[in-house]
Length: 104
Image (cartoon, rainbow, N blue to C red; front, top):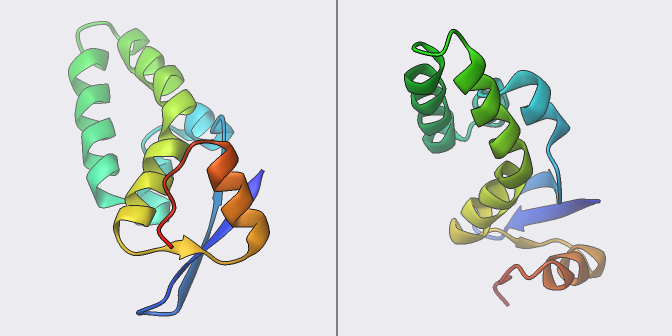
């Protein structure tokens, strides 16, 4: 389920998916990099390196699997915290049904 978020101050519109992140599952820390989410890019990169090096990559794969379940929620919460709001009624309803605190 995709939602549209808009920032009223900058008029920037971003589309985000709610739920499991298949892109994070397959591409790991490249997803936050492409989205411009620098904070989570560096966090995910550091965790992947720290756990991946001593385990020959196995720890990095586990990190990718775990973040696949939580990254979209983290990304949407960061957008909402930076002033983004639902762009339409569908997005607002979807956020409320998935227990996001959308600003009014």
